[in-house]
Amino acid sequence: MGAIAAGVAMAGAAIGAGVGNGLIISKMLEGMARQPELSGQLRTNMFIGVGLVEAMPIIAFVVALLVMNK
Image 1: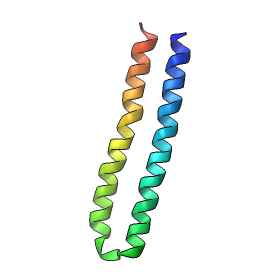
Image 2: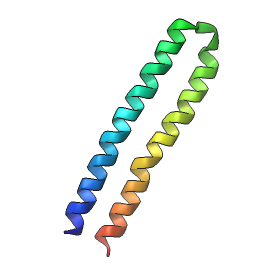
Image 3: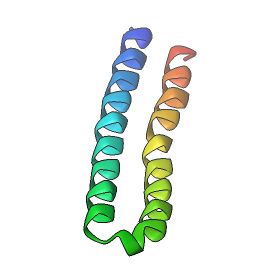
Image 4: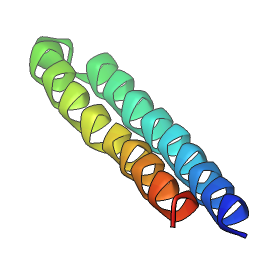
């Protein structure tokens, strides 16, 4: 039962991270197209946002390992 819960947690985290990364990158490209002079600042903020979004699957992986080993 723990393996099923771990798989569901990882699937949800992976889907959420994929959608989140897609939204962040698409909005950053839209902002760069509208104001090219801010591309450096937008890129920096994008990398921070992507890093925060990618933390979610890592935390879900750790939780999945804890659930499986319980």
